[in-house]
Image 1: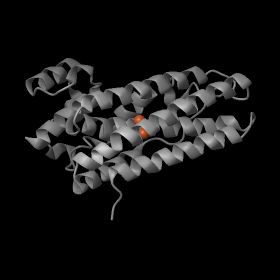
Image 2: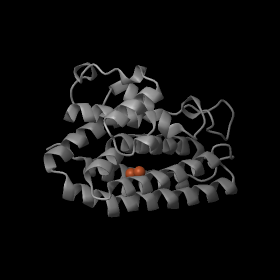
Image 3: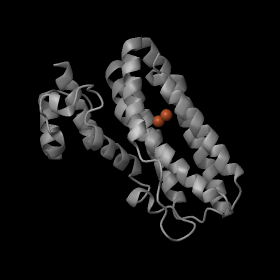
Length: 236
Ligand SMILES: [Fe+2]
Ligand SMILES: [Fe+2]
């Protein structure tokens, strides 16, 4: 039987814990390439969660908006911490200390998802739907970039994925939505009513979201708006 959304997220969390240990165990001179891989993994995980997990929690779990917002805030903090590390020398003690702090924040965030969010999914979403969401998660995860490209200089990951770490999760998420269309709709994008939302301006997307009375629209990023509109169309 295919793994469901909860299993995929738990597996990813386990992988993240393991990768943090690998970076920390590598020692000053071996940290950097492993850290880059870790950043790629974190960006991919949070980007896919932002597409599949948070909107589902927001829409289908009691108090879901509050739960989803709390997790998003933790993810934003972790991304800011990651950004602090990006121009540090990976072999330095300062980097090691910041890395330890990042690990604590990320693992606390993962634990909060496991304690406060995943059981709610199990309770409020049926097994078939959780497996469908698991398939989406897997598809998006497989399409995400896994090999960051370091800037030519040593001791930095500033050029990861062609830009700064700050905003990286959004860039990965936008790239995934562009590449795969609406993950909330198992049909091909063209079959979902021909809505080429990617060609719309943010204002047009917001206007349409207002017409459809989509909750939380004003705080949504472009990709979230597009996903929410397509979900609404699919459910219509
Ligand atoms: Fe998360
Ligand atoms: Fe997570």
